[in-house]
Image (tube, rainbow, N blue to C red; front, side, top):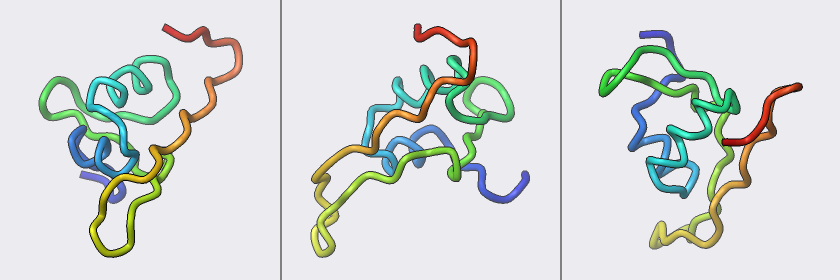
Length: 75
């Protein structure tokens, strides 16, 4: 596995969004993905970082959606 790729649940926590959003972003081409199904991994460097409380890790603000690639349409 190349470095920098994480599971959908780890990507969702990092970005502060539901797992379904990670799947949608990958299907729209907003973030890079390798693998298929439960073994799919997502490039963490493509993900927006959520803002969390320094001490409690409580979500303060989810990351903004990455931009669509040129010529792509949102789902």
